[in-house]
Image (cartoon, rainbow, N blue to C red; front, side, top):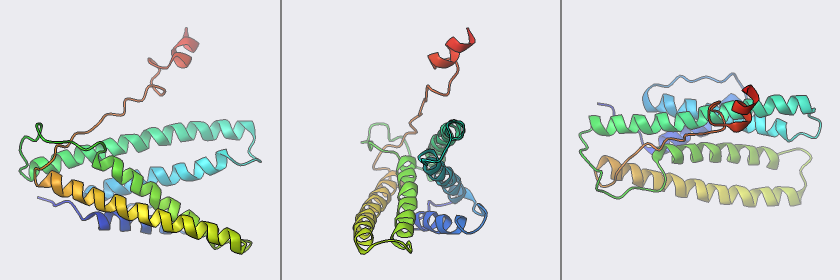
Length: 200
């Protein structure tokens, strides 16, 4: 039976991958829950850079349209991976012998969603540092960015600790765990009126 890794190891994986992927091709040498965390993180990484392109004042309408479709696809994959993470946790809880917890309290956020938020935070921290260290940055700019980095680090630490507490509670049978299905409508041809009406 594989135990769930400490949250500190997962956040280190996310932070290390952001830096590595900016200097070499994206890779995922992990296995188990770490492989899923890395895969989910990759979609956020790709989304981050597509969002930058979409806001470029030099981007043509055609380019923006292509990026928008890419963002929609990546965002769906990102959300699918949140569900896969939560499903994997359900399996691990079962393998760990955690019994019926349906009568116990449940958090407003699943572990998969918290892992997703930590992924985004690691990207934010990397790119804030990148902006702080720009050659053309003024002292005022660096001071503003440093203040934001400090705040992000506090939030990252708070969320990491909260997720660790949640996981400890789940595996000790003190809280209930569920996978919440995203049920996105806009990508479903049978549910998005702009799609099914166009086919009529």
